[in-house]
Length: 143
Image (tube, rainbow, N blue to C red):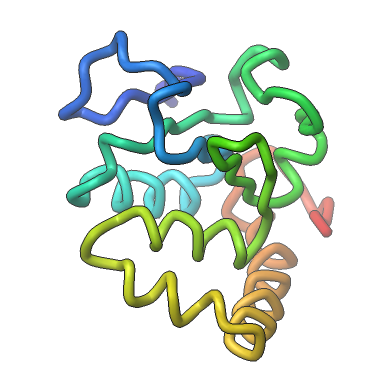
């Protein structure tokens, strides 16, 4: 198994690009194959180079920033906005979609309360089964 760097630069982005210049910072579980594949999809889209991508499974704790520790970062998907506020679950996905030109419409739609509630319910179901795809996780449920 190959390891991925803690902070993943977009292939089209120079390594020196900083999180301070990013539209948002995404914290994802790089040890989850499904999660890695989805993040790779977002990173490859137009606008993906403007987002900072942090693999919470292998980064230094400091890379997670204030208010987010590794346990929380591994339990749910998180996005930090430039103002420092944290979003998780479906709201975090909606924030990413709002930043990607081809998905802005989905981000606006997903931000509507009833839609966000349905998406968050679905995300909760995913969290219960994702351990089946995560190597070495056994039957430990993530809530």
